[in-house]
Image (cartoon, rainbow, N blue to C red; front, side, top):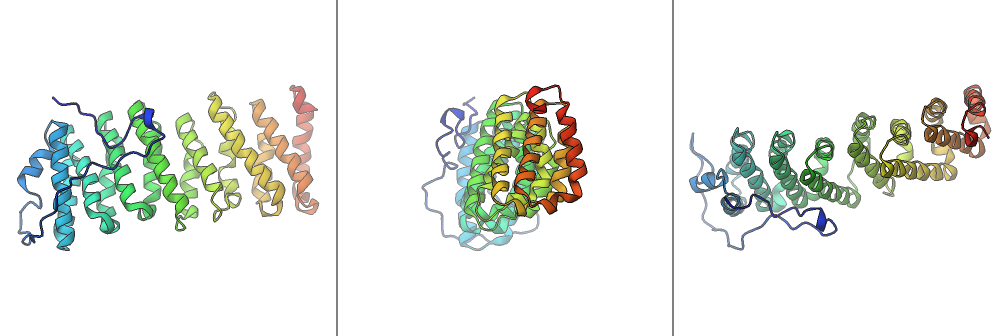
Length: 352
């Protein structure tokens, strides 16, 4: 049997390069208009259906290339019923099949369909995305990899249109980052970079809708999910139109807990992220929701991890120095109590 390795998402050895798109055919689509669908008629030619379910990767790929041309024909003909019927068939009959080759074929086909749809893709994302995201939970790692590859190609065509579906895509990214398979992880990193590029290029990203899902995942202890979250917080904080200080109380606790993680790189990333926010606070102290942040810092001064207590104390010192004194009055007793506990801390650098 031919090698079953897809060609559209490179491995980590070429992570600096932009992954090539799904292989496309150079053939010119026919201008013939398909007749209307009749009841019970399949929207796809039999040879494409057979090819997509074949155990050979090359045959599935060739069938997907034929499907791409078929989709282009339907787009030119403005045959929305057949387009919708085709995508529904791929999602229902292939991506949820008990046969793993059918699931792989369905995922390759959805990526090919996205390329065939091109500028029309936004209209069909509700049909393209759910089957792909469903396959992120597939028991076979190769199918999960194909799902990652498929979403990459859909996102590459859809660009900013994909942002309307950002939260379920981000949940999918969390699953992929926590995956035990290294190929899936490599594909997830490439997909993550593409989605970040799309977000930073767009002026339509709704950070307010993203914060609840960030808050839900920020307490997860999986180091790979934590790395994903820190990366997104850092990237969003660099977008001029987004002020992450406004949302700091929603995820700050999670960043502090990461300081005690056993993964050194993750600890350093969380520390840099917190240091960046602290630098912003020194410049824009009045823009911080002190009513929510100070109680969190007071609580972190009692954390078991030394790194958390040190960082929390540094933050409290910053608030005392840079915050208008009258704004801290309601929390003087709590802040003083935290400082007194730190004075008796067994760690010398903390008690000093």
